[in-house]
Image (cartoon, rainbow, N blue to C red):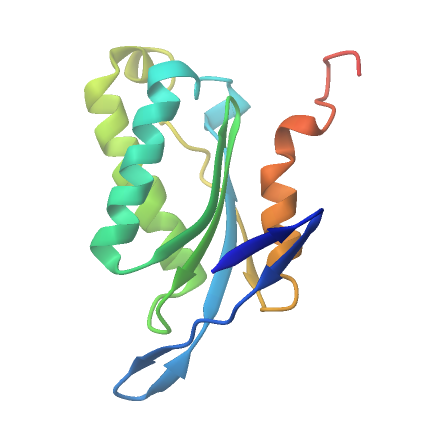
Length: 149
């Protein structure tokens, strides 16, 4: 659970249980379209958010923060201990690529694949979770390369 107090975010730790123990694992994942093309706008961005939330629900993962920008996706997700960072990233990338390319023809014709093969993933502890959420939430406020800012 996240609470805003002025410009500070406080985190209430939510520990999950499974037969082998308890866990609270957070992951900050960032990935980009192939060639960093700004194709994630409008209806594509809306559908991408829906698909990411659908995949998280299917896997039992909790989305804490999500920001879809024209040329990148930032996701802060709580996941289970059996899922590695690469598994989490690839679950989102593979599923969303397949569905978006089926539904939006221009994503097939303009690019050989939707996503770049790389991604960024960092584990997030309870202490730095607020920092990651604030970072994701303020992406639109940051100057972009090439926009003259």
